[in-house]
Length: 169
Image (cartoon, rainbow, N blue to C red; front, side, top):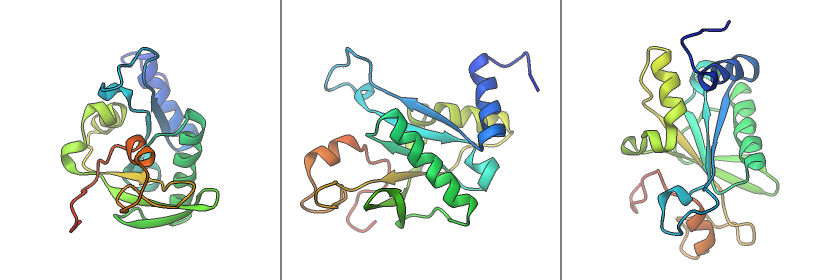
């Protein structure tokens, strides 16, 4: 049902959650982005996981729009089949031949820069966005995650760590 108080974008979010179970927001760097600019990040996040599968929203960095959508939709499907998202949860089947790891996003990283539409949606639903999970992927050649000792800089550079990175995490 159309709500005239909502922007077209906001209505699209609600429609996608109703039709598909979630809305995916993709953030890509502008063509003229400066290398040191934080907007250089490429990421995508879900909106509506809490409503559809009673799970936190998810975010993934470094992929194309299509791959980001496939990974987020894959997690949504797995949650519909019973996957519970928790810190350090290993997930197979999102990337061919590689497992991914689910990491809890630190509360101070739940900011509009990373979750603007998800935060709007939570507020729209009369709630506060209090949790999110980051889908972390390994290097294709070595299977190493960003926290692994010999992980490539390229893999690390593409994935902003929104999770706890201390050694005792």
